[in-house]
Image (cartoon, one colour):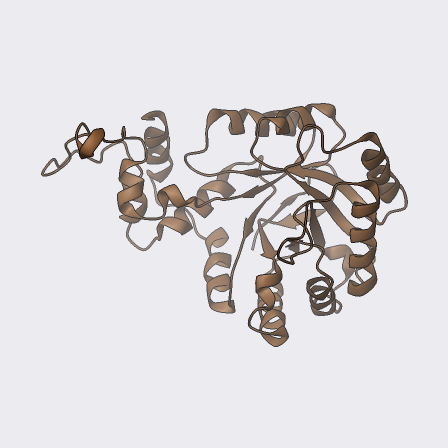
Length: 301
């Protein structure tokens, strides 16, 4: 595992962050513990809780209890409910304070490194909520404040200078608005947590080969003719699925980690086998020429 500075905090964070939601408990507590232990053995010191679900927080806290807390980075996503079906977004001062306090109480973590607000709308954060977040940071129940999302409103939140961390989608085909936002966040000394490194639009060779092509017209006519054309997929992302000894997902993950602005990339795994496969990627060097192929495919859009 490799490590990078976490913004200007002085802390080091693993280039992979294990994302944990209530689905991590679907196979039982023992399986969830095994997954977290495998992550620790792989050198992953960064974890994100998708919700403030108390059962999830308790399991994660117990699994991490034997590690020096100062060596860990634990983020808590706020605004996605508490993991129960039908639970509502709550960015109120009382809601966020209560969620963090409950999480700390059952987990025994001592503090949350990053309170990460999940795509708050332009009018979803009243001054009382911002004051509550500042109070949580002042009392060291939370170390850093962050926002996460892909909408244009993220530009506004980045520009305020009130947040320390930006969670953002980041992949080989991400648009220029996201790239510009990442640069602006780095200029604000924000740490960047990347997610969605392997989007659905690229997860099969067929989709990767046609992601930039115009859609077919009525009744399927009007699309580009690619049959029997050896150069039909030149300038596309089809090569992601054709690179020997590499999966398309591994290439996309490795590419996200090549950007020095990215502190860590969020990954999800149901079991230790998949986690170990993902954890091996930071130690691999991308094949020569892949970076150029990615860039050519991007500019072909």
